[in-house]
Amino acid sequence: MDASSFSDIQQIYPDAELLPVGGGTCDCYRVRLYGKLHFLKRLKPEFRTDPRYVSALQKEFDTGYRLDHPHLVRYVSKGDDYLLTEYVDGETLAQFAVSHPEYFKSRKHADRFISQLLDAVGYLHQHLIVHLDLKPENILITRIGHEVKLTDLGFCYTDTYTDTMGRTDRYAAPEQLDGSAKVDPRTDIFAIGKILQTLPNSIIYNKVVARCTATNPSDRYQSVEELQRALKSTIKLPRMIFLAVAIGLGITLLLYLQRPTAENRLERSLNLDTAQTQRPAPVIHPTDTPINIINAASPQNTNTLSPSEQPSVIAVSKPSREAPLRELSVQEEAEIRRITLAILRPIYQQRVEPFVNRITRGDFDDRFPDITPIRDSLNILCNEANQEVYAGLRKKDLRCMYPHVHEDDVNTTFLYAIGDAEHYYSQTVLHHFYPKTKLPPNPFGE
Image (cartoon, rainbow, N blue to C red; front, side, top):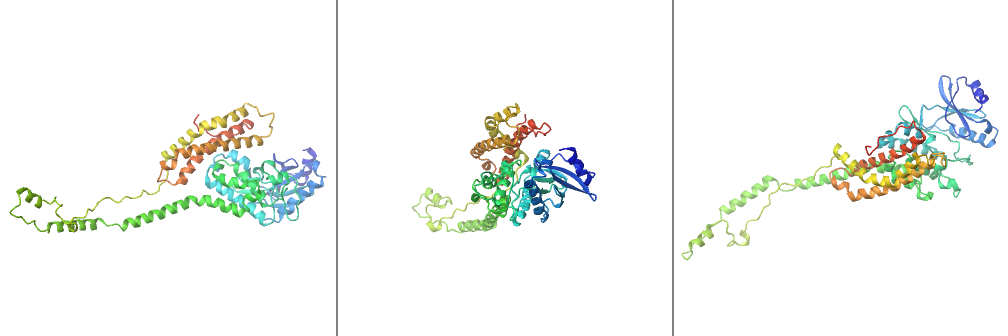
């Protein structure tokens, strides 16, 4: 940016501050208007006379100005080569994931983020707007409250602005890349799936991500509402399991209460004893020998009794109660984590570590100045390794080790262990390119 461009902005906004953000076509500033901070985006000098970029800026303002949603950045005003929006004090999703590495490890935080993002995208679709450039750099997370703010409608598709000038290849759907089909809301759903893959412990959403990123648009979720229902079902699954178990325990308790009580069993036993004491004494004939007389009088000898006189056998035993479901203890969580990492370590050492070691040695620095393709390759390797880890866990059958614990609690515990390992390797790669990146603890304790 030349000095004259900055001085032009300062004439309008004397306290304008150039920000270290922006793309290849615009410079960005933080300005104060009537005591309130705003965000100003202005075309770079070489693009200000290009009608394509001028019309794209016009389209972004006209589209955004009529929208009002808590998770969309509000548009305020525009000039010939710039537009003004509300200022968001926060970080992009990409920056936030680095500066808050533990935040998205909480399922509650991840679900909240996804819910807010989908609310904003669904609102756009309701107004016949397809964003077409959803990516972590266009999603802001506020410092206070960690609220989502979606921004940058420069490449959007609407019923009045059908020309889309750009995209971000890493998050672009196949129909954007090759023009094989017209873009529609399913194109944004593809990008949402790619964004979910960037979250720590994204493995929890694997099934949802797989459908979002299907090559054929007809195989994806057909709307944001359908995607929201699919995500809610994954949240409600533990509750459904708990409800089913509670119903089962209720039925078991009801059957137990209908069994004879201890008093009834005692009464039946006493009745039997009374019947035995009232039995007539055996008749002794002159021909009977002493041994025959003893046998006939003995209460243990029941061979001479008729079937109707035989006493019934009553089995007195304590009722068997099914143990109630409980939570994993700290020791059990540690044991599941240890088992998972023991299975994971040799697989990652064979599949993932050689690639990471080549990166940290600098083998890819010249060929890949952009970290994006390296991240993509690492994600593929980790996903392939994770499939082997799952196979090993199935053989171990952790659920049988804890039969009275919610299955979802067991699954979540080993998924977090896998996510910690995957996050460690991805941050190791990021640290090579950005040394200020904070490395998480080594999950293997080295």
